[in-house]
Length: 153
Image 1 (cartoon, rainbow, N blue to C red):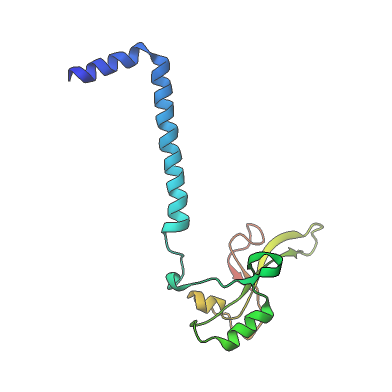
Image 2 (image 1 turned 120 degrees about the vertical axis):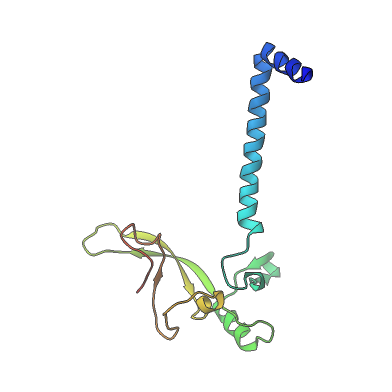
């Protein structure tokens, strides 16, 4: 008990040191918490898909250009799909940007989009009424402004 009293008295005698120590501890604990939160969300938790531990991403390599990871072209995807003897299924996707123009609005809205193969949603275990034989657009919550919810058009 005497040591705690002596430590408290020493800290009260030097408020500058006390403030610096408390600030340093607070920043250290805060930074540690932030890093752990990111690592937990990105690395430790599984992806929110069925059998997420079995999902893999396939890349092409362009050795002559010095590219170790290059997105697979749709032509190569179809070749891989025909010759597949290893994977349960293969799906493809490609990022793109689109303009959404509402009638009467002068400025179109820029949207991030993905072109996907028809089997991507079933491969991820996502239940959908979308028939892969027809064209369609799947909009997420963040698409098209606040007035649009998740929609299939």
